[in-house]
Length: 162
Image (tube, rainbow, N blue to C red; front, top):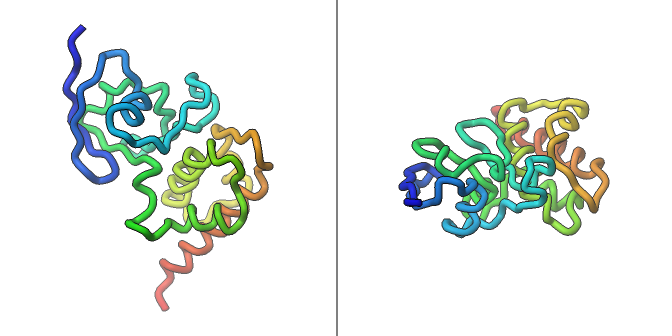
């Protein structure tokens, strides 16, 4: 079976790769492109550890064929920080102790950033609903929710003119 040539944009940069037609986006991100932040927790779209943003929509990269990335825009956990400056969501996860083993953290951060990008003032219920597709086996969800609330507040303050 011949490999497919895919041209896409990942974290703002043009990217090209060859893949088998049956390869998942997660397989290519981790194996071909060395973007190992997204994790495979379940391989069936149930845990959210592999969450990325594809053309502005959150997806489980274990359920997307790599070939579907042709001409599309992908954002992964590696693109959340700006250089060495952590995004407020990342910083608040650290400050609020919203992680333990860290396996699920990249998916939660990508999802949380997608939420605050769309809704700068989410309620606790909205946060919990938005993150419902991401599972954590180590922490309770309260610290994660508090981190998202704090990040949203920080981002709102940054957006407010002095």
